[in-house]
Structure formats: C-alpha cells, structure tokens
Image (tube, rainbow, N blue to C red):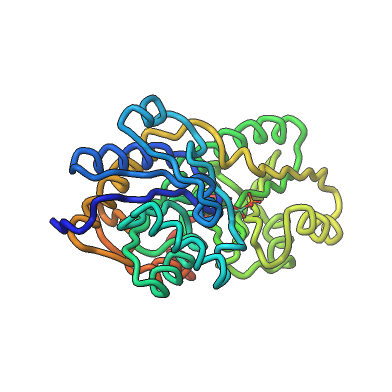
Length: 326
Ligand code: F6P
C-alpha cells in the first residue's frame, strides 16, 4: 500500500450519468475503510478552480446509490483547460493537502486529467462515467445501461403509435461522437435502420431499403445517433421524404431524458465496483489510468488510450441489424 496518500479529492465532470452517485459512494466508503480522508470537489474541474471543496463522510453518501445525477454536480469547464486555470486548480489542491484525485467522467474529463497530471506530476485515477459508452478499456461505462433502457422504453411507446398510424419515425438519440447508444437500443427495439457516425450513411441506400422491405410493414423506426454525418433526425427525415413519397413521417428527439433517472441494477453494480477499484488503484500506486471492467475483470487503461474513440463497430452486429430488419 502506498502510504504517501492520505487525502483523496473526488469530482464528477462532463455530462452526468446515472450511476455516478453509486461511484461516489463507493469511492468515499472505500477510502474511509482504508483510513484515507476524502474530499468532494463540487462542479467538476470548475470547482477545482473555484475552490469548492467539501468534506465527505460515510454518512454523507448514504441513500444515494439509487439516485440519478451526481450529488457533487458537474460541468464542462473551459477555464480549467487553460494554463491559468490549471495553475489555480493546482494551488487549491495543495492548499487542501490533496495527495491524489479520482475523476469520474468521459473522454473530455480524462483528456483534462492527462494534461493536468502531466503538467504537475499528479496522481490521478479515472472512473468511466458517461452514457455514451465510447471509451476504450471498459465494456460498459457508468450510465450507458440506464440510458439505453430509457431509450428502449421510449421507443417502445413510439412503436405503439407508429404502428397505429402506419408511420415512419426518425428517433434521434444521444451520442455526438459515438453511435453506441443508437446501436444497442436500435437492436433492442427492432429498428428498421440504425444511423451512426461509425458507419457511412447513404440517404439513397436508406431510401432503397425502405422501399424494398420485403413485406409491407405498418411502422418503420429509424434510430439516428445525434452525431451521424448525414445530419440530425430532422435533416435526415427531410432528405428521405424528399426522395420517397407516401410516407407519413414524424421525428422525435429523445434528448436529455436519456441522462436522467434512477440507475439500473447493472449501472449501480458497475459503478460500485469501478469506484472501489479506483481507490484500490491509488493504493497500489497507479496514476494516469482509468479503471475499467473488461470480460468481468478489472483492468487499467492509460488516459491517452482510453479517450481514443471506438472507430469500428462489430461487423457481425452490423450485418445482424440488416438481417433482422427484413
Ligand atoms: O457526453 C454525454 C452526452 O450526453 C452526449 O451524448 C451528448 O452529445 C452531450 O453529452 C450533450 O451535452 P450537453 O448536456 O452539454 O448538451
């Protein structure tokens, strides 16, 4: 055990994700169990610059495992990403005698952690918390499972009305750089097509596909990841309906409902495990890494690798979508 660490700082950053509270609880209680002090930093990196530090105790994280959002609040801090911002943040860490940081967030959070850690030779460990699931080094990020279940519940409802009216629906889901929410939820709702930034979207091909669906379907649902290169759901709907007449088309943007809600069982368990392992990683002397779970085993991935987006989707899955949407 690395004895030099006595006090840990903890923050959540970037888009919130259901399960972040479960991770906070796990970090706090594992730290206390190991005789370490733990301090929360409010509003992510912004609070690090603004000196928003709060002492956390085992009791202060009671009754939060089941709650969405993050009790530490979050932000996307532009100020922290400047030389001046990092200098103030570093001075605040020293002032509060923080020996190590645990940051919960996505790729932007870890890029910030990498830069900050390198600049001041800091001990920082990451916990993957983003609904997008777009990090390398973990099978599932915290929040992804809850978000895709929210999408499935919403699209099942859309399917009912689409079926009654014989309508074509374009449903936009979150994921500005990644289509993994679209992919998994699209498979689960039996979508007729799934449009994602990782695959090329050809409007003519999509039109052909809609025309050639072998049997006459009453409803058709196209899931569109917000980051698709052909545009958002409204734009794509416009392009498609301009080329093929006779569709009664509608668009739904699911938006931020995907980020809220009580975390699923899977998110609570993963978040607990990842938070627990982040403290263990610090105790083992690790720094500059994200904790993850791959094939049920805990792994550590360097920040610079974790933030590289998954570029290629499993081709078997892409083929399967094609086959199952006949
Ligand atoms: O990174 C998570 C995420 O929900 C993305 O899927 C989405 O593009 C983005 O955050 C939205 O961010 P904001 O809440 O700042 O608009």
